[in-house]
Length: 132
Image 1: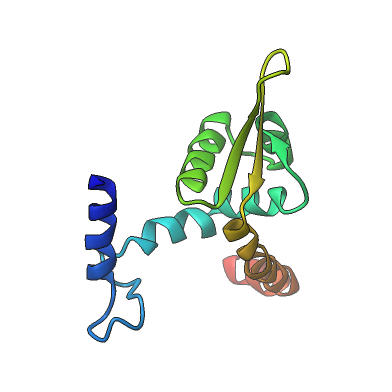
Image 2: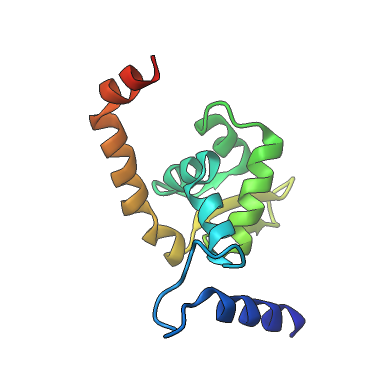
């Protein structure tokens, strides 16, 4: 109950005066942290990796090149907490197997994130040129 009250207070603070739009520029907006995890380097790659199929933790680490086990674990915890990823444990396996899959909310992010990757790929020459 206390968690619900906390979220409700921050959601109220996050809305503008007419309660129509979320103000992500407000430092107290609860959307900001979730958005930073989802659109961040590792969150985006994990979501895109899980867009194809459910994966075990070790498969996620192998698929997402360069991610440490610690960062994968932390990012998956945040994504699970926000309802983007669902963690399932298969108890009858020895040892128990843990799978991660996208929720319906998580699947809603696949197209926009894929579009972002496509735009970056389409303009990779320009992006790299600007860095030099």
